[in-house]
Amino acid sequence: MEVKDSNGSILNNGDSVTLIKSLKVKGSSLMLKQGTLVKNIKLTDNEQEIEGKVDGSIMVLKTEFVKKRG
Image (cartoon, rainbow, N blue to C red; front, side):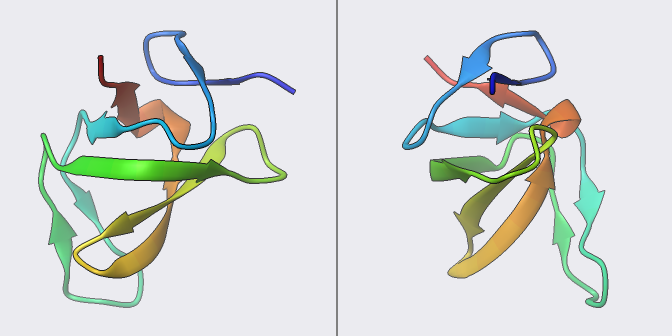
């Protein structure tokens, strides 16, 4: 299974990504701002979602809203 970011770059476990859009976190008043760095991502069973730690919390992010760093 190939997991791709918003630009079509292939993502792997351990990559770092940046948010390309500000996102509201469901069930919370928390807002993730555009440009937020998410380090050491983990791939999920769904090719359109990744897991990453943001501000000490593990979040599931849609790949259409992230781009690979580096």
